[in-house]
Length: 438
View: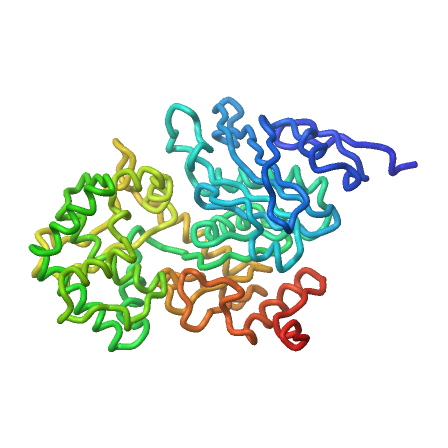
């Protein structure tokens, strides 16, 4: 008799009618019960799922002020089975895919992907109200979505994200630790300033001395041959319709400074670096493979300006150590990314925000599985979970920023799977087991 009685649930100021037998409903019926969804569109789905929807939520600009106004927030909702776990991908940028996440495949799970506020079209139509872009407001967005879907999916919940999305996963968990059962942030830095000096120390010790020296000599050669290579850069910029508010020459210099960070981030091979005997064309073609130029291009900056705003106010960033190259630079002051701030806004970093995250990570960050690549430049500021929680940190030997669970040696993958099994209380086919069956 009680199974047929519905109940009223209050979520974010909205009344939602649901039933204890909600798993018997269709995914479309689930969405139609959520009052703060403005649009629902079925889209093509990954083969793992039965159906995928693109949905737009109506979110408050300020979760603490109902009169602050609203903005549209995009998400992808992919359903497999109400009895399976739910993987929620907390995107730190604009969403780029509705395909199944690595963890969704491993766990044979449903998936909910939530775009970050103020990226792409998840923003007010006229302009971005920057004062509402902070980690607490973004976490509240994600909490609102997760809370309403948890009414229908009673299994285990796992949050995850890669890079800035990994950061977003950590921040959300700090403010709403009960929203999910476990969290798996990939390659997520925890920066303590807008130019975290740990990056410099990392770049002086990562890899072999021979490789680091080869990188340095390549950078020097790019500076020495600027008269020959700068025209190549100018031609490329014209073909790509790039715009550099700082000027072409300054963009060229900064791209050379960025090279060492990008090299280790993306896991380039030391053998691929041209030597001093190489032609200027070959030197230029090599740096074009990493294309650091777009990091300083105005239209590209505009696409991800919310990232830079957050980096320069709360989440932190890195700068460039210019001293080794002072001879070739007109401006030898340490470079920060203050130039990326929105017009009229000054970069003022608030260190207490990440200090709070670090304190929580060490004292209360339980059921957190941190994954990093050993040689990834962003690992220079990796989370240190301490020894007061049950958090696990795994570092992929020689790995870069593209590190995924499948990137680890099979034995380490097996350890990761065992952690997931233990925390989720479910059996998961291991790579070792699968290899033994072949």
